[in-house]
Amino acid sequence: MNESLLFDVDKAVAVLTINDEPYNRMSLDFMDQLESAVKEIASNKDIRAVVLTSAGLENFSVGMNLKQFPEGVKKMGSADALFDQRLKVISEIESMNKPWIVTMFGYCLGGGLEIPLGCHFRLAAKENAQIGLPELDLGAVPAWGGSARLTKCVGEQHALDMILRSKKVSGPRALEIGLVHEVWPLEELKPAAISLAHELAAQPAKAVESMMKVLVNSSDRELEELLKAERQAVKDNSGTKDSQEGMAAFMEKRKADFKSLNGIN
Image (cartoon, rainbow, N blue to C red):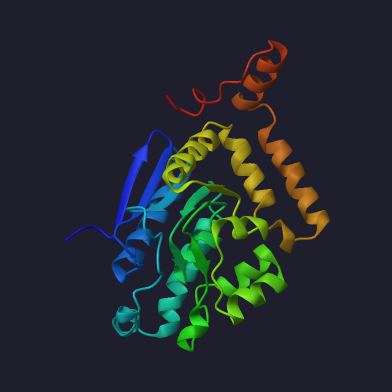
């Protein structure tokens, strides 16, 4: 039996692959494996960035394997406990202070959008992507934080349009409304995500961590709180090896090399 989630590490980049072609359903085993992977990544200082993708080029994910819902409720003890596990995992991704990049192609539905909404960089395919929260078509509603995060991401108007009408949007349309950060031709999507992850992993490690503490969910905080967080980031990064290398590179008119300081070869 295949693993539901493949976990590979390339230098300082972890690559997680949902492994259930062609639909890449988010099974109970997948969620357990993702939960474990998130904990491992959070505790591993050598991992500086993460790519979440899926096997093949047909679909990122159609979301939860609904046939397993009764089994999941029985296993976890209640529907609330089942949903809470998913909410916790997504929250841990969002607040990890390590950038997560996700590739969105084909169907990205239900949980296949809710988990990406917890990621920091969303890259979508220029063609074939169908992104949405179509739970109302099933007489249900989003349960993994999708309605809340989608509204924060694209605003009330677009969230109402997508959720109440079970509307699926394309990659280019997702870019227009601010749901994704970049669009790429399908064949270039995964390489682009890997490249971005390595770019981010090569940035000064402490500075990335500090800025993510300031920037992630900044819209929920008052300006005064954010200014205090920024000042703390300045203190945390003052006199570090990275800051010394950055200043030396500036004075010597060369590109700073943070890779060696971060232990990246």
